[in-house]
Image (cartoon, rainbow, N blue to C red; front, side, top):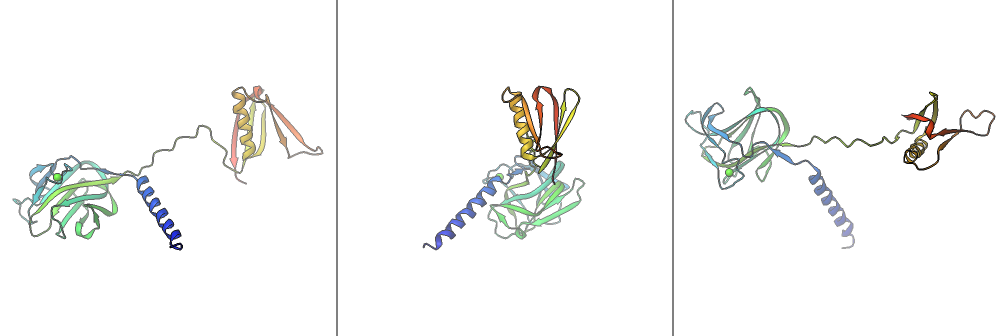
Length: 254
Ligand SMILES: [Ca+2]
């Protein structure tokens, strides 16, 4: 049993990650819920309307006759969108469905065929079928009974995954991320001072500046220049807060 524990832990971790991923993954948005769909013999010949297949009630539905080429037979349900849609999955729940043929066809706004699927060719889960590929530019959907006997359709729907990420909050103050940065300080006198610094040195300066702006810290900031020292052991440059007009940080990676 002892040897099993790491395996069980691994399984638990995997399960938890899967759960987390499904929670984080965007929820599909229903495109047909509550909509009124048209019933008829074809996508252009209608006999009536129904909202019994979009009422989220599994005790209500519409019976579609066996699909035939006859304008008086109701064997399909159609919905026209007023604008182009993107579809990732669909729902078809048929009373007592086992493997009877039933198709879902997607056309564009002009009625041109985009793609069509038999629900028996897709793997469904609780009546939801994921499309093999995302469909775009969909203007119309047709649910059709391809079986040789009537089928009672309880619910249909189309879904698009909400996966447009929201814009991240802009950083209140950009933090230096490059390895090195050129800090250019413009003094009130018009003089510009340039310092070639590491990211953490720039951060030190920004921290000092922000503190100083809040009335904390020293009036002057000291830069220890380790470049262009010449004959001197060190060169220090002092910058007074009250003399700074503005400063700019230009990051670069060496
Ligand atoms: Ca229903």
